[in-house]
Length: 95
Image (cartoon, rainbow, N blue to C red):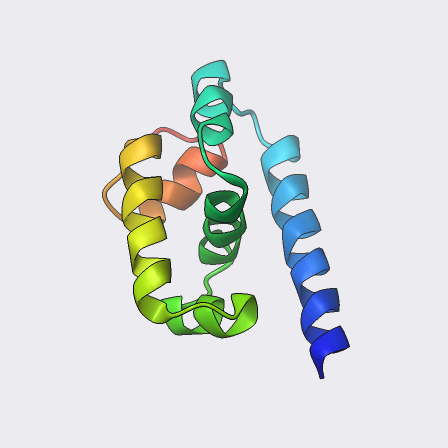
């Protein structure tokens, strides 16, 4: 089961990279994304795919409270207020 989780993690990461790379991301957005830690990027990628905090926590073997804390930091760094705005910002759309 763990290898399935690892495979899913790899697919999720590549999917988000493709979405972000294929969109017209403004330079400021790219700079904002670079401000995220590796773990914040992992969580932002999964949130952008529609995963819940609980799903993210289970997949990354962390608590839901830790995911919430990371999401708060991601929102602050990216300059958004919710997940919809996060996805739009990651795609280079104006929130």
